[in-house]
Every structure is written in C-alpha cells, then in structure tokens.
Length: 416
Image (cartoon, rainbow, N blue to C red; front, side, top):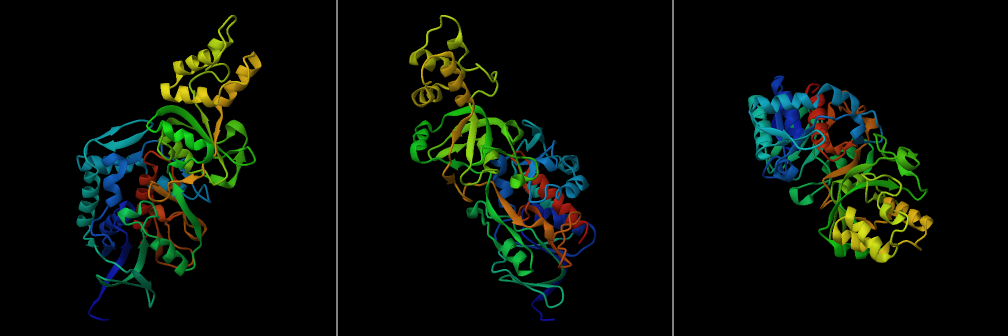
C-alpha cells in the first residue's frame, strides 16, 4: 500500500448534517471513520438554516411530508429514527429549543449548537474530519479508493452524503450525482425546491407590491386543470379540485415574484407550465366571504365599495391591486359571485423559479429504486451508500429535510 494511502473502515463524503450524523453513529459502533469535505468548514448549511436557529426536526414528520418517485421509500428510515430520538440527543447536550408552529422545532440560540453537538458526537466515536479535500475522485481497486487534494483514503465502505445543488455559494456541487452515475445508479433530474417563483409578462406588475405579505392557501394545477397530488408521490398522480396538495400559510410578494412559506411549499410541486392557484381569503366562507357586504339587499355596488370590501380582509396594497385588476364584470349577484370565485382561485402563471441559488433544497437525486430502503445501500454495489439530500427524497418546509438527514444517516450508520 502506498505510504500516502490511509486505511479506514468507512469513508463518508460530505460533512453536512447527514454525513456527520452517519459518521458519529458508525464511529460509536467501533468503526474507523473518515469524513471528507471540499469546504474549509463543516456544516455550513446547518449554520444558515432556520434564520440561524436551525429548524432541526418536525414533531409531525411522516412519509407523507416527502416527495419521491417512491412514496414509500422513506418509511423505513423514518420509523427507525424518529423526531423524538433526535430531540433526546439535543436535550442530552443541554441545547434549548422551542416549538414555533406546526411541530417545527428550533434552537433557542444559534444553529451552531447543533453543529457542535454533531462534531462532539463524531469526536466521541473517533471520527477523523478532513476538510479542504478537493478534487475528489473514487476508484474501486478492491474496496473504494478516494483520491483528494488532502491525500488518498482506502475503505471497504463509502457513504455519499454530498447534498444537492442548492445554494452553491455554500459549496453545493453535483458530485453525488456524478458518483451515482459512475457506479451505474440512475439519477432523477435535480431541480430547485422550496424556492421563490418568478412572475413575468402581464403578471410582472405584481412585483410593484414587493414587501406585501398575506395569509393565503396555495395549490398547484397542471395544464389539465387538475391539482397536483401532494403526499409522497409528487407528480405521480393528480386529483381534481380539493384533492390536491394545499398549503395554508403566508405569501410574500418580492421584486421578482412570489415567496413566503405557502409559495415555497407549493414550489416543490410546481413544474413549468403549471398554474399556482391562490386563495386570498382561506379563513372566510367559500361563498360570499370576501364580497358578502356587496351581496346584501340595498348595498352599494361600485368600484369604491368593491375596493373597500377587499380592504376589510386583505392588506391595503394587495386590496388596491386586486381592485384594479380583478373587478367584477358587472354588479349583479352572478357577477359578484363569479368575482368571488376568481379571488378564491387566483391563477398565477409563473415563468420559472429563482433557481438553486435561492432554493432551500434540491428535489430529485439518486433514484430510490437503486437503493435498499432499510440501509440506503446500493442494490448493485455492495458497500456504497447514499444518504440525505442527494437521494430522491425531498421534504416539505418545516424541519422535514433535517429529519430525513438524521434518519437516513442513522440507517446507514448502523449498517456500514
């Protein structure tokens, strides 16, 4: 063996959430583990997540919170290591936390506490962390030989935890997909997810409302007019009307289009050509909720009254904008009811997304058909594992992607 070639039981590529967790679990089992990363700092995405407080899991996490070509694939790993298991680890380290909304758990302090916890767990397991390991190449002359600018590493097991393409300024690359293809695994085309949507054409006028936020419900509909199904199967099926995925949360108008939690959630299901359908008053009755005052006997019915009715329920600038572009075609009961329906199903036609630079995660990735669900090991290449965001399992907003990182990492860490 060349003197520069170092021997380990397990080499993990990627010092992010999944990679560090997997290394810690494997190290605790007595495996000799090295974690390699081309960055000079581990866990960079952890540090910026959740506004710097790290939304590290969600108490209500289940397979239905994920998109994948196989809606059942994540079930085994999520059952093996659940949110309460990670919460026990957090509490063991004395990290303060709070539930924000809908089961989302955040650190009371800095996200750095989560990173330091993972690094401490790795240290306990004797894991060696190698940073600035650039130019990674993998060969298989008996086991796996990983060549990098920081040296060469030999192992019987290789875990790919290199993440997706999201936020390239933090060091995101397509290395994991390249390695998957190198070893004959299929890759579902990566695309930005949990990402702001861009408006163009006539809808570009909406960007004049930049900074306006409103509570809405958002769905995605295809060219066939049917809503995209949400739970698990992603685009595999569609339901008409209310059968599709619906996100009730806030929308934010930006200088380029639409963002905010409701829009980010819907964006994961959106594809070019789809409509983003927004209900501007999701808490009001479906019929006559916004314009009820105009439907009363003897009520004033004109543009001024219409604008005032919208102002009662919506932010001022939003109400004024909708009054200017969405006034009813006449003032009869039928015209007002048709206008109400339009305001409750306002169809935007986004021209694109803001791309991987603004996407919180990457959808698509290593095709789950090539992986064992219980261990994340390649079916065709023994000893090769893929975990975390690099796999075609993408969580909704709210801590689900971190939980997938922990769960998939533990599944692999106990198997390597």
